[in-house]
Image 1 (cartoon, rainbow, N blue to C red):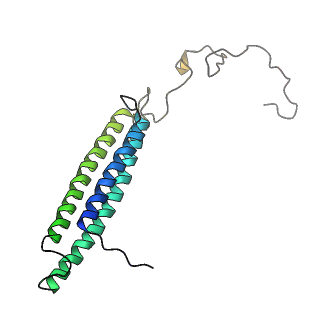
Image 2 (image 1 turned 180 degrees about the vertical axis):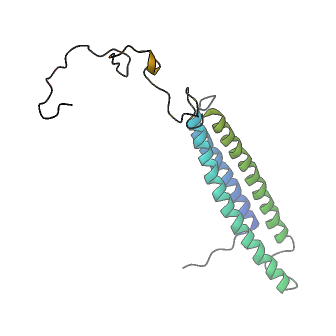
Length: 174
């Protein structure tokens, strides 16, 4: 396995910018051109932000490891080789920028979640209420208002009254 290339603070800054741009493009694609996105688009945008946050946190962990390595090297040596006195400060500034972006994206994701909750009715709450736990009826009339013997199809047209089309089987009196 090839050893990892040491990344500078500038490399991390560029990675952060690339992630911000990629997340922005993905959000535009998820939401689409409509002025008011629907629940499906909002859910897609929330998924995009969740994935972007995952990648941003990974960048933050890498950055934390780099800062820890720089800090331990600077403590071990009076003057670190290769890293100027401001290198650690630059890494910490990038880490702060990553944290700010993460907080902003988490806030947006929370807003999307709240908007989705507001728009989508909770499961089990229909016309009949959540107490019964049953979905609303589709027949058009409440159960007790039909005449006895009247059968309705789902689309509302009455079934043919009278004899069935085929005689009953002798095996199953039914």
